[in-house]
Length: 348
Image (tube, rainbow, N blue to C red; front, side):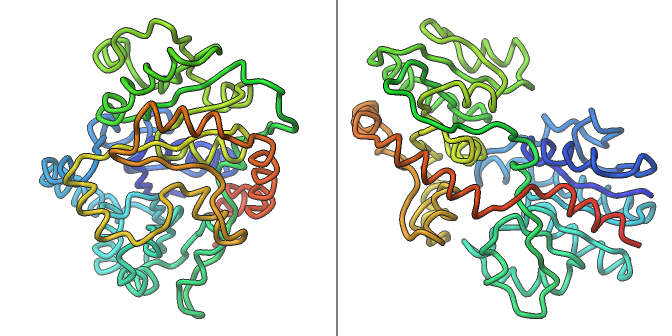
C-alpha cells in the first residue's frame, strides 16, 4: 500500500515515526516527511517558517510543492495529512477535486475551533476521516461529520511520568524553541534568569540542529549544560522555562512544572491577536480549562516576557498542585493515538 504523506513540521514527523511502527511492512510512504522514513521529495529544513511574514516569503515555493504533491497523489492508495493546515487543506481540496474517490485522512487537525471556524464545513466536506487528538474538538463539528477522537500522540512517546515533587529545585531546564527566530528572542532573557537561579541549568537543543546552527543561533552557552533528549531531560528536571509549542504539552504530561513564554514578531502577533479569540495559548491550558475551568500553568507573552516576571512566577509556583493537575490531564487524554490511526489507514 502506498500512502501519500504530507508532514511538514518536525513535531508531525515525530508522531509519524510512532505511527509507522504500528503499520504493516508493506506500507510505503511517498511525499513530504523526514528522510529517515523514506524518500521524501523535499528536505524538511527548507520548509521551516515562523509566522505570516516568513510564509509570504516562501509562497511560490509552497505553491510549486503543493502541485508536486497533487501529481504524486495519483500513485497513492490513500492520503495522510498531518497538521500544517495552511499547506494541507488547499492540497486536500485539490486532491478531492481531481481524485474524488481517493480516501483522505487528516491527523492532527487544523485548529479551526480557535480561528477560522468557517474551515470546519470545508473539512467535513473534503476529508474522509478527521482523526482528532483533542477530546473536546468534536463538539465544534456537525453530528454527521466524519470525526473521531483517536487519542493523543504524545502518550505513544512518553512512557515515564513524575510521581512526586522534590522539596527543592536542583535542576532547571530551558527550552527557547526549535525555530531560529524564537530562540534568538528568548535566549537573552533565559540567560538573565539562569544567573539568578541557584540550580543546575540545562538547555535543550533540537537534535536536528547542526554544529553551524548551534554556533550561529545560541552563541555562548556558559552556565548551561546541553541536552537533546526532551522527555528524559524534563523527567529529571525540577522546573522548566519553555517556549510555546509541543514541549509545553510534553512537560504538562510528564509532570514537570514550567512557565510558558512566547515572543512573536510584532506584525504576526498583531494579526493573530485579532484572529484568535482564546483565553490561553498553551494547548495544555486550553484543554485543562475545558474540563477544570482554570489554567494548568502560567503564560507570559510578548512584552510580559521579562526576567523579572518569570522569576516572580517561578518563586510563587505551587509545584505540588501542578503535579496533581498533570495527572488529571493525562486521564483526560486517555491513551496514545498511533494504533487507532494505523487501523484507519489499513482498513480496506
